[in-house]
Image (tube, rainbow, N blue to C red; front, top):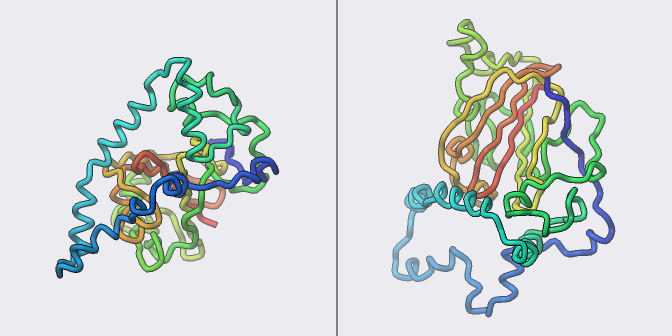
Length: 281
């Protein structure tokens, strides 16, 4: 059994709240001259004036072939490069500033003690930084909730008006026994008509605490790894690419808790992470 070691939201200190949490894109855009402040869609204006309208299908195909896996692997290698002591504070301070990292919550606040960016990325927090709720279900990680709600049949809403299937996302449930093969997918999950299945999608930004924990007391019965792409999971891309979460590399943990089926999935993205967990309530 996995001990529930997630956390509920904790109010940040007044000192930290007084600092505007601006995104890196906005910060650097303020430093650029106006003629350099272009959006990606503005680069298509000359094509539109010439009568060329790039289709969404072509745009998705081009983006799907972008070397996102290579970029993510290179980013991972860069994170593990040991920094000389004199370079740690200047370089890591830029990361802290750009992504609004709250070092007051970190177990080790001194940037000189982190040998590389990976250690800062995976930093542990002080025991008092998060208070674990006494509820049966808590958040498995820091981050922003992109979507939550009840599943409709075997379909999950990716964004409004765009869905993907549970079967494609979780994979075959052959671990539950051969007698389940051939049954409707919800029955394979052990979901009865009286059950309600809910899902929660949590997005981890670069500045968030990047360790994750069990959101409940549950028994993990099966683990399945899906190789795939590492496309961005930002809301803008989620509205644009159907079945995005089914295309990306992910690890699905499935099992049982006190109410029935339980699943926690870590979805990879371009240098980031996404967590989706599904529960019967």
